[in-house]
Amino acid sequence: MSPATARRFGVTDGDVVELSYKGRTLAMAAFVVPGIADFAVVAPLGYGRAGVGVIADGVGFNAYALRTSDAPYFGAGLTLRKTGARYPLSNTQEHGSMEGRAILREAGLTKYEEEPNFAKEAVEHPPLKSLYEEPNKRDGRQWGMSIDLSVCTGCGACVVACQAENNIPIAGKERVGYGRELSWIRLDRYYAGDESNPTASLMPVPCQQCENAPCETVCPVAATTHSPEGLNDMAYNRCIGTRYCSNNCPFKVRRFNFFNYNKEELERYPDDAALVKMQKNPDVTVRFRGVMEKCTYCVQRINHAKIAAKRDGRDMVEDGAVTPACAQTCPTQAIVFGDINDKTSRVARKKSLDRDYAMLSEFNIRPRTTYLAKIRNPNPELG
Figure 1: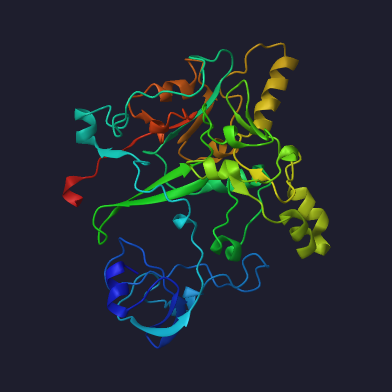
Figure 2: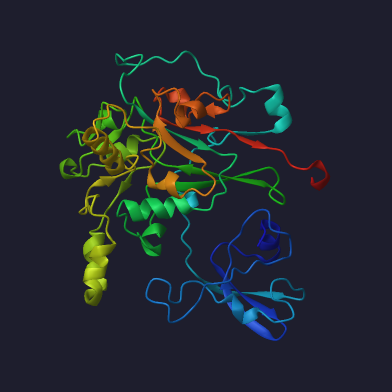
């Protein structure tokens, strides 16, 4: 429901309300979302099912209980009553606040035509200087990524693909409620404008693979280091779990596995242990508890392409030969990956556009993952 509706009924996130419609009733947890029409309730279908296995059994509320054949999707006459009960909700959107910084940059088409460099100039800062001697240019193969916010639909396919490719366990609702999550790429949601009619934008955020990575300088055992090809690597068997790197990461994209999730999964499904093992990607380490995890641009795929090139007698890995799981599954091809030193590569061409910008570039961390600012061009008659 909308914030205005929630205030009218004295409802906050997690309050259980009773919905009544044409003689049918359903108790359901409330979740306040800007942009929903006032005095309307959206009840998602597909949850609260039974007999579908331990993962989905009983998750959420069965909105089909309110559905009728004469109004399968929309209807009028619903009544709402606050019951006084509470239902815990877990939401990762409140994790890792960026404290009002210009993270997602967007503009209308008119402003973009007048100020094509608006994304790069969104944050003013003095000349950037480093405490270290930095190479002005790295030679050889250098990996990078570009994410186009104008074509990203926020479908979440990249999150699921990354989870499957890299053996990322599921933290679960209870542990997410404690502020813990394990996905290596997240989808940030941002609102702009009035809460009754805001514009919403979505932004995929993996590890940015910073050239001046603040996580690397604080690791006491050099478990996270920079590769010659520009990757911010992780040596899992060297990590001792200090979590200094996570504290020093301005993007909050590092994940610490507090528990032995793989063992828990095997114990939960003792009769299907063989199937659980077959689900894992054999090219990626199954991590034990107490280590830091993060995106590495699917380094296993990078190495596979390098080995194939060497086997075939080629000096170069051809553009497109390496596609991380997130880019492979993206239905709009918003995510592009490749060698940024190859000026003919797709990623290099993307990074040369005037919409290209680096998140938190004012920190002089020089991330290898950059974004193409979102451009809106709505029909003025629908405004």
